[in-house]
Image (cartoon, rainbow, N blue to C red; front, side, top):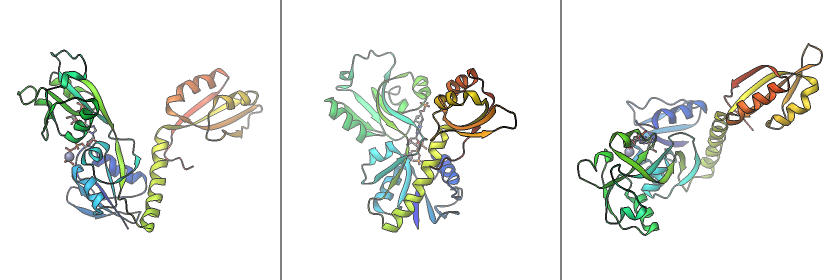
Length: 283
Ligand code: PRT
Ligand code: ZN
C-alpha cells in the first residue's frame, strides 16, 4: 500500500486533498490526525510540515509526497520528481528596498540578504559570481530590511502584494515553483504500478482543467470549415439533427483558445453554442 505525505496545514493542504478527492481518493481532514487511511485507493496519508516532506520521502517513511518544488530544491534530498500538479504556483525572487537604485546583480556584492531558502540562493549567487552575505531566517523575511537585519531579501512571491506593502521591489526572479508529486527512488515493483495508476488519474484531472467541452448546432454545409477551426482530440463528434440540413458538433477545446474558436464558429453560422466544464479527460 502506498503512503503519501501531504502538508498538514498551510497553503498546499486543501488543494492536495482536493486533487486526491478528484482522483477518487477520500482522505480525512488533517486537523486531529498524523496518519489516516484513504478511501477509494489502497493508500495511507501522512500529514507533515512541508519542510519535512522531502526527507520523509527520501527516507521511505512515505513513498510519495505532495510539496512545493521550492522545498524539494532547498532540502536537496534524493527524491524523484514525478510530475507537476498545476497548483501552488509561485516564484522565489530577490527584492530590495524601493528607494535603492538597482544597476544589476552586482548590487548584491557585499550585501546582507535574508532568506528561508539559503541553499537555492547560494547556488544562484555562486553561478553568477556574486559574493553576498546570506542570512537564514525563518518566517517574516520581508520585514528584515526595515528593521535593519538585512539589505535585501530572497523570498517567495506570488501576487507581489507582500513586497509592496513592505516597501520592497522584486529585482530578480530566480526560481519558478509549483506543487509537485515526489516519490522515493527505491519503490518496489508493486508500489510503482500503484504509482502509475495514481499518476494516470492525476494527469487526466490536470489536463482537463485547461479544457472545455463545447457543443453547437451548425448547417451541414459548413461542416468542413468547422472541422478546420476545431482542434479536437482527434476530430469532433458530429450528430444529425431532426432539422433538415443541420447537425450538432461536440468538441474539446483548450481554455485559452475557447473564445477565438467560438467567434470563428459563430461567423460560419454555428448556433446554440454550449460551453461546459470538463471534469475528466481520459486519453
Ligand atoms: O507549516 P508548514 O511548514 O507546513 O508551512 P509553511 O508556512 O512553510 O508554508 P506555506 O503553507 O506558507 O506554503 C507552502 C507552499 O506553498 C510553499 O512552499 C510554496 O511552494 C507554496 N506557495 C505558493 C507559497 C505562496 N504561493 C506564497 N505566496 N508559499 C508562501 N507564500 C507567502 C510568501 O512567503 C510571502 O510571505 O506569501 C507571501 C507572498 O505572497 P504575495 O501574494 O503577497 O506575493
Ligand atoms: Zn514550511
